[in-house]
Amino acid sequence: MPALFRIKKNPENLYFQLKANMLIKTFGSAVQGVNAYTITVEVSVSPGTKYFLVGLPDNAVKESEQRIESALKHFGYKIPRQKIVINLAPADIRKEGSSYDLTLAMGILAASGQISADKVSQYMIMGELSLDGSLRPIKGVLPIAIQARKEGFKGFILPAQNAQEAAIVNNLDVIGVNNILEAIEFLDGAREIEPLVINTRELFGNTADQYAADFSDVQGQENIKRALEIAAAGGHNLIMIGPPGAGKTMLAKRLPSILPPLSMHEALETTKIHSVAGKLGEAASLLTTRPYRSPHHTISDVALVGGGGVPQPGEISLSHNGVLFLDELPEFKRTVLEVMRQPLEERRVTISRARTTIDFPANFMLVASMNPCPCGYYNHPEKECVCGPGVVQRYLNKVSGPLLDRIDLHVEVTPVTFDEMTATRKAEDSASVRERVMKARDVQTDRFKDVPQIHSNAMMPSQMVKEVCQINEAGRTLLKTAMERLGLSARAYDRILKVSRTIADLAGSEEIKIEHLAEAIQYRSLDREGWAG
Image (cartoon, rainbow, N blue to C red; front, side, top):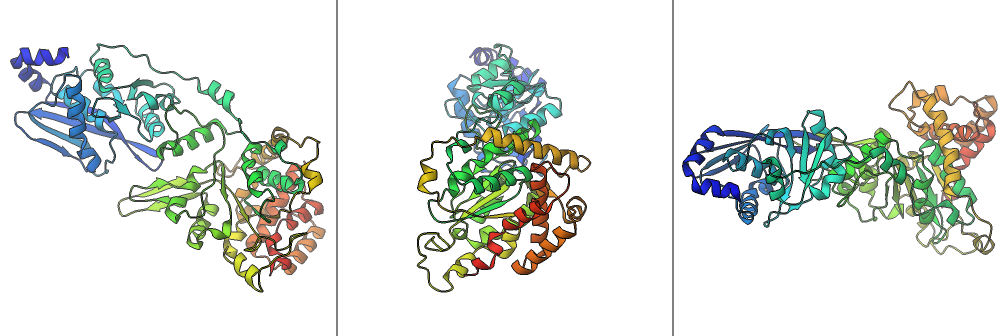
């Protein structure tokens, strides 16, 4: 309020302040994909009466004038009745959303002399204003903070609810404010706000690998646990086929608990994607556990792979460095499943629009489950299938061959017997399995140390498979017989070799032995003649 009284009591002083502070620059940020780009907000106040906002703003940005005016009035400040021209540069990038409210407000106050202009250009300023002047949380804070540090800003002024997320970035003063008055007084030198500091390493160490579900909860299903261990060790995609109630979903939920812990780089990368999508929630910080996403089968192709008018990451990108579980795979629309084929190979998805092309990372493990037929009891050991002739094949044909070829492990899940369900023996816990998985991953890390874009056996291109997955004459004979009997494609041939390499890594063997190859071949259930319906 003192600033308002100063203006009212000495209107001549205002004119000189306007003259001195004719052009003020504040800084915000636009997020495209998972990267942020600095936006310079140039504010000019001069004699006149109109308000101009230029630089390709969308409707939400244009509506900021009303929010800013109401918020400032609540604390005794105002938008001056002068000619105000605001330019959002560079003008060829579209500015979207309401997160520029605070940036624009600080620029107007500094240009009109209501606050000191000394500090406004030292900080990245972002936040959405309520009509009462309080601040609402915004999306994409982590990539904005990373960019602010990269460009040498002293700090980042933002809503207090987002401060924990921004504080992941070190060497940047994170100033969390609850309302516009706190931001005004901080920039005017009337209030001290201590930057929020988080020990990221400590946070990462304390919360990593804290999963609610554990393998020790699962009785029986040892063959499925073995398949999940192989999938986790090599980063392989997996599909489980079995009747209702056999435990497919329960087992899939526990897969993240046996994956290696996120590295700091992976955690930051994953957090960035969730930040851009607005999925972190209030007062959230670094994601320290691998994501597990399980979209419903009614999902659209855009929601799965990403896109929209303002391109946003889809479920496959939200699963980056984690697990994407598709329950009841044949119930998904065929177009939805087919759009996954390219991201499964390239481990990223490219969203192309007339104005821009955006890449979202999509390095996820695909885990799917399905019933063997519409009634669910085809090949069941006890119950009889009631599906008519050809129905089973039509049901399986809902999932295309090219998509199945991209899934390394096909596993048949049988129901747990009563004796297994009531057994008192404690099942092996996730920590023990994860230890073996991590040893196998260490072998792969050493193997691919000269190829930075490859981290696991599943990521090997075809030419590398020939070098890394060499087999002896007996293995070649076995594989040839399997290929001919099962009618496998060239891609399936590569998948078998990759899986056998992972099985050998788990066994601590430098060579792929015939037993490793035989186990890998048996994980192609859907290629067997018995599934022909």
